[in-house]
Image: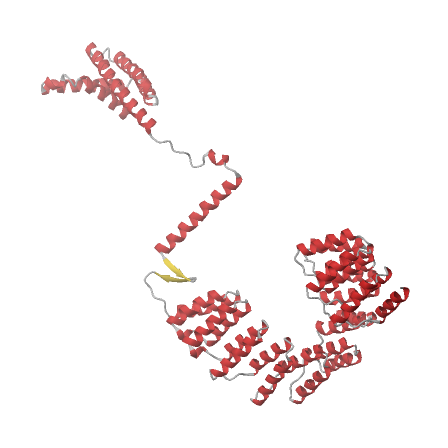
Length: 615
């Protein structure tokens, strides 16, 4: 404790001593007492014991010890002042100290009560959070972070600026033309992310304020985007709004979007309705309009309508394009009418339209399916001479054509040439070779190409696995069939009707009717509809085990499903009843064939003759 504090304490104690009697003393007497007190204070400054004891007293924190310490101080003071003062000074001083200690005790008790009544505050990092579960702690932290983020955003919006569609507006400012130009650019970003709904909202906002910043092209892009993401209703609604409220936005391009969108869905009736409304609005169709109608009609195998529109476009003076001729050539090639395809192929060259890779691929595919590989190779060489490079579809058409004719060596030659050209074979190309060797019974080579496709990063599909399952089922290798079936399930490839038909056929040939019933139950649980091949396999399975009741049951279910039994099924029933010498049932299925319009084969007639001859 410093000297000033020490002097202040002693002065205070002495003043308390003289408080009672000082009021009745004269001015001179009080002055003499003041001088005497000052003398006592100066003498105490030189005493080391007083300094040490005073520092000890003021370092105490416990208020309960102040009373004893004060007595200790006074005792020292008195002992040091025995030579300079009278006895009444020390006696009065002790009395004053005792009164002060009482007041100090009262004050300390009041402070203690106030502290007890104060609410206890938990520390910032309290231990109760460790009693929470991990999920609750994660949720609490996430909630706190979200609240902080929201508070920050609200402060930013309230104190600085507000935002509309990502474009800042200072409070009180009005959007200018530059603002709307920025929003017009945002339309393209929305369309790039395939979000035509957001693009349409921005479009309406700009169009209502600054229509000159919106172009016909942007409105057409929004309309086209709706059809690309299969939101035809929203697109049609937007188109009708433009046609009703903004006729200046109307053009042939938007009508073409509607016509093409309906044609891709196969709704050619709606496409022709749009075509008639388009002409009623005095908008002339162009070559794209007719291409959409022609291509859509051909996909629906409606060649009459396609040829009518082809003639109409030429009557209007619209020259057909390469796309127009490619649609006609490809359609007739798939139909098998290659003479008609060649007719339009020659016409397009006369009209100055240069054939492209799609044109030649359509002809090569048509002749390959017919088995006329001389013509296929002729057009392949012709396109190479003209500098047109064959693509994967071209080579795949040749490989599949050779495979269907059993010419696997030629298929492999084209396959190797395809790889030498730097083209990566697709899954359909590999599947075609796997199926070709499967039909030949060479499953080892099929598995070779199956492993090659996986090594080259080509993922097998359901057709690939079906080919292998069918191959092993034909050879009655049920273990391998089940192995590849489980593999495709593990790869999350959904089986189809052909998958279960192959499994049923393999188990039936082995005579395991329990497995047949098991696969049939799975097929029904997956809500897969059996086809005629499935029912044929079921009938053969039960007829082989002489279970005619189950075979007849599936025969009737087959007819109830609208599937007409083929000659092989009826022949199997007639041959089975012939072995049992059951003439009535044998004739029943023979008459059933006549009623269904099925032409009996020589084998069926031989069974009937043999049955009647035995009896």
